[in-house]
Image 1 (cartoon, rainbow, N blue to C red):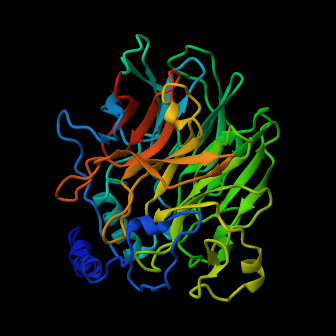
Image 2: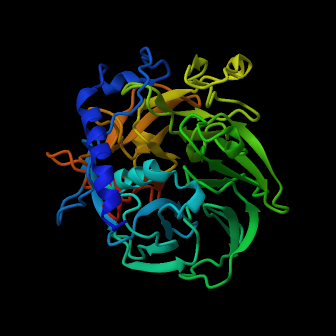
Image 3: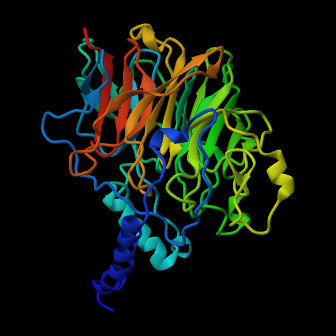
Length: 441
């Protein structure tokens, strides 16, 4: 068979996906999917999910996202290679994981369906080139808001994502393992060979990103591991220790499930108000354009959050068989919905003084939908908190990631607060890191 033959065979299916996008449309405004009590309409199971892809085109020269009133945005760094996640070191240096998903084992690629999914993700700007598999260091020594130093800090990794510094040890969550390298303040490159701390679930890696935070005393590491499927269709044997947050003993590498039933827990952050762990979670697909909402929630140790048998608490997903009413009865309702299909990935709590309007609240990077009509997400938002809990509607921080033709000039992912109190946003389609400050500056 010629190399072009599979593409020709797939074109009718790709056309079918496009037709599905035209024939379905959200019946609720995007805002209905936000808040502590989101509007949850009746499910509309889809044999073929809505496909409404914002084709990735990158930013025109000199153009940036649109900052909300009272804010300004500038490019902190450009020319990166699919920057996904950020980590700010104590000396103010910024680490950025430049990463894409690892190659799937041949037996786990999913045949023609998996190949078509690859085409869809490439159109959206993911998987269109090999993963850089590195962490770069960005340094703004003169304090002008732009990194004048950009250097490869650590290379030879495997789809790195989460990072955490504990003393003189830097931990990195690869797609298949947590590793550790020694760190010295001010270094711009590490040549030491990473030492494995603990294995992580890998294989098919339907969700490959592995986020990472350390406990306050540095003895425990917490890793977000997404599911290997939408609703367990690849068998629950492939979901062992997945759709979960794992707790790893930093000294021994021993791991246990800290919380489960979280389809794809990406962002992890400690709430400075009360020290509780929070996560942002991507929910399931193909229940309609208005279900199920992504969410952020505080994490109860030992808690179960429903996946795959229920969503947003105890709302049963009838597609999952055999039914497990016992598991549904255990499901904890999340704290705050973040909109259906918004792909809410980045999560941080604001801890600086530069932007006092964010004195108590969470910032979320919404990568943007591929399966909702009209699209949702494609923005950075702020959710105010009071007494350690979400309190009020979300507020836009950065918008304008899609142009007038609906194409994606950028897609926000990781968010972090830099050493001067500005907000940093990783943009994996724009290959940039954006910096948000008060407009007066």
